[in-house]
Structure formats: structure tokens, C-alpha cells
Amino acid sequence: MSMNFKIAKIQQSFVANEIRNIPRAIDNEFQKDEICSTIKPGMKVAITAGSRGIANIGLIIKEIGKQIKQRDGEPFIVPAMGSHGGATAEGQVEVLHSLGITEEYCEMSIRSSMEVVELGTTTNGVPVYQDKLTNETADGVIIVGRVKPHTDFHGLHESGIVKMAAIGHGNHKQAQTIHTYGIRGIRDIMPEVGKIVIERGNVLFGVGIVENAYDQTAIIEAVPKDKMVERDQELLKIATSYMPKLPCDKIDILFVDEIGKNYSGTGMDTNIIGRLRILGEEDHFKPDINYIIAGDLSEASHGNALGIGLADLTTKRLFEKIDIPTMNENVITSSFLDRAKIPIVLDSDKLAFEAALRGMWGVPVQEVRFMRIKNTLELGEVIVSERIFNEIKDVEGITVKEELKPLKFNDVGNFGEF
Image (cartoon, rainbow, N blue to C red; front, side, top):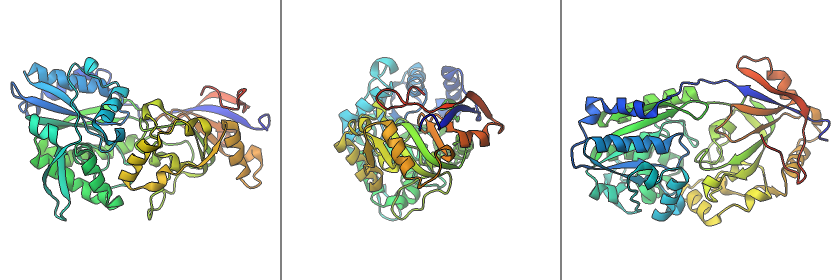
């Protein structure tokens, strides 16, 4: 079979705006009068840190802390990740460490708590919470978050500084409260919760981060408190225009080398694979993928394989890495239960691939539209089958990295290095 099935590696070109000097960029942001004037000598300032795999996040937080120290403030880091890390204070610190956010590197303390205080309610009576430790021990908080399209819904506010203020900084209790309402909760209720936290909490300002299609920092912007809601919407439009995508919209078999929370909150970015798997919500129409194979789980996920339910097949090595209680806590909090369903488990990549081929119902092997990616965050290099290769090799923005060659597996039946 492998001698008849050929693959090639291609390189995609995307928008590549990138900040090369992050300390300088952050220093420039802190020179804004409406930003630097909020930091007073002696202030205790909390800096939020989420669970996403944001490029350069350790350095960004470290440099924000330096700016506070230069103004004689006392910065510290607070985990702001809803129910992630097993919904425990210790687990959330562990997640930060896995992202390179440590006390030693960032040169400031990390203070973690799951306790919250209530700031009020929305117009529909939904309670609004803020991290208690931040509310009662900090003079102010800086909401730091990456702005990008969300993996569950589309609206005026998706992933960003408003969502971080709402769900991230409201800890497990706020995440659970909002997710109880399903899609309506995160699409419609979340923005109002975020606005109330920004207005009534001790928020100083926000720092919005936008990444380019190569997962590199493109924008770091300090946003004044009174402009956070409006600017969050504007940065979302920019982030959407930067999003990468797969090189074609029709795929028979997609092999994803690694899924994980560091690549997307859903393990695999639903905007990339075109699947939501949310009760009552239609999947995206593009791309159209018949079968998705999840090959492995990232170490940074700490066993949280939420998103495995987006795949149709997986491997034994991924299955054995799943921490069921941690994954269940996250998916039950989100209320999108299908995303933790375990797909067919096979012993190797080869067996998973052959099972997917079996499901193609008589399509000649040479005609199968196969694609392999590292993860849904890094889409610069992509491996494609002969059928797809012949269609896209001359398309603008596509460069051939490796010409067609037979598909092969190693001695244990797995793919080799990408």
C-alpha cells in the first residue's frame, strides 16, 4: 500500500507581521499617559496569566512586571484560567510552570486561589465573580490575554481580554456559571460579565496580544480600562485576518500529530478543522474532512485530552496519556460533552490510517486526499497526498519543500519525524 501512496511536503506563506523586540514594544506601551498614570508607588499589582500556549508569554509577563517595578509598584502573577489545571490552585500553578511562567524567570511571586468574590449580577441575574485574592490583596489588576477567534462560537467578543476578565479571572466558579448556559453563556452572557468585571473590579488596564499565522507575536497593546471593550472587538477583527488555514477545503483523512491545550482550548482549533461537536450547533462548512486521526497528546496538556472527541480515530499512545479526572473536570465545566468522547483507539499510526482508508468505501488509494499536520497551531509546513499536491503545488503562497515520495511508517508502525 505504501509504495502506491505518495506524499509531499509543502510550505504555506501567511501574513508574517512580528514583534522582534518584545521588551522594547512593552516599554513603548507603558509610555502612554493613560497607561503609566495608573501605576502608583507602593501599589500591589496583579498580572493575569492564562493557560493558553501564547508565544513569548513568559517574557511578556516578565516585562510587564519590570515596568511596574520601575514605577515602584509590587507586581505578582495570578492564574486566570477558569477551570483548567483540574480547577485547583496547585494545578493552575503547575500549568503556568509548563508554559515557562515561573517565579524565578518572571522575577515575581505567583499567588493562586480558587476563591472568588461577587461583584454583582448581569441584567438577567447571572452572578459576576472576580478572583478573591486579587480583589482583596491587590490595588489593581492588569488583564493580559491573547485575542483570537474562539473555537466554540463567533460574536463581537471571542477569545480576548474581555473573556479573560470574565471567565479566566472569575476562576472555576465563573467558568462553571457561564458554561451552564452552553453557547448562549459564552457568546451572549460572557461579554456582559466581562464588562462588569472591568467596570466594578479593580482593573487598571488590559494588554491585548495578537499573533500571526506562524504563532508569533504580532501585536502587544496596552489598552486603557475605558477602551478595553471596544478595542477587544477591533483586535479580534485583526486577529481573524491573520488566521492560518489548511491549504485546501476538501480532505478525506487528516492526521494531526499532536493535540493539546497549548495549541487550542479545544485541543484542536475548531476554526482550522471545521468541527464544533456542540449539541444543537452546526459544524463549520469548511474545511470538509471525512476522518480526523489524533496521533498524540502534548506534554503541556498534563493529560487533559479535551478535544479528543473531535477526532474519529486515535492511537494507543495518546489514549494512555489521558488523565481522565482532569479532562472530565474541564469538559463537564464547559458542558460540551461530545468533545471528551474517546474515538476508535488503534495501536499505531499505520493501523489508524488503514482504518480510515477502510472507511473511504472503495475510493482508490491513489485518489485519497490525505493531509498531515504537526498540530492546528503550526500550519506552515504541511504533508499532503499526491492528489492534493497536484492541485495546489502551483498556487501562490505554496512552496514545495519535498517532492513526492512513497508514504512509509517506521518499525513500530508510526510516522517518522515531520
